[in-house]
Length: 346
Image 1 (cartoon, rainbow, N blue to C red):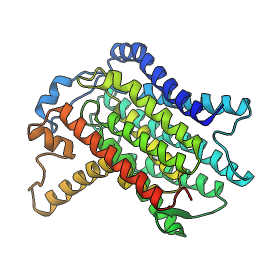
Image 2: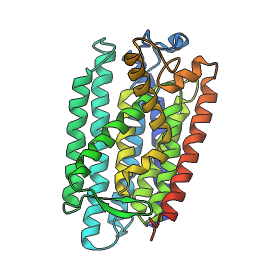
Image 3: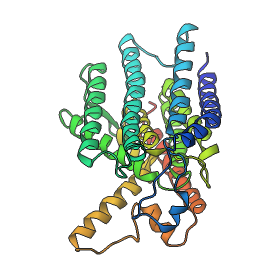
Image 4: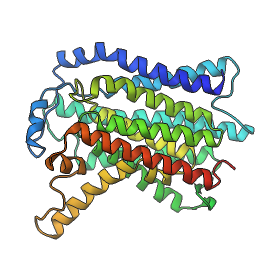
């Protein structure tokens, strides 16, 4: 199987699987009464979305994972090398990153599923407590970093544009946990209006597919393509007005995939550009909370995360999605240029 064929097939397969699953999953979620509960501290007009099926992220989780695994297995059977390239050690490292990344993303998705299940079935609006989420997410972060560390023969280097491969030593672990935890929750914050997180993640997938191809890492271009295809298939059902929400099941899985692709290219710091909207969304929430506590009740934004600020400023959901997606696409293009001129492909 050629590299281009693998990438295209993964994208199309993920889109088709995800889109078709909507015909079965959405009625099933309705039948189980797995409807979204709109909290009172959100925008008042979101109350009209009360009862919309949630946990729909299982659709693109299935689409993305099945498409990626199908291509990987088919390529292996036919004697291809889409995932692996280079020396025997490099092949082992790439396999570790590929499979560990998928397992990590699914693990985060499972944490999200438990959180959604508690909200919907147990009727506890806030789901898992912050302490519980933090504990479970941290355990997955450490397990993933450990697998990467072992797969790389204890290498603790990261690629920095214009600086090359920089060994961070013990700081690699600290930086890794911070980046992973922040990314997971920032992607979760982005899931606030119809189609936003899905569209932003689609642009992320496009930029990461291109960056991975720069280094000849076509297995991860394929994985990014599968992620993008899954997002396209989900957008059929999730665009405004949404017929289904992804829930934490979906947003935490997407966060896991974002991390997996960033570590696949050994440059997690590139998320600052390829996921610039995630950064802005997460930062806006942290800034709002910090400012509120410091000033005893004052706010910088009308509501956080920042997409709600623009909603309350009169922007339509469609306009927010269009602008935020464009900004993230530009961030991805800048990231590609930075990696290209920073000698990532050298």
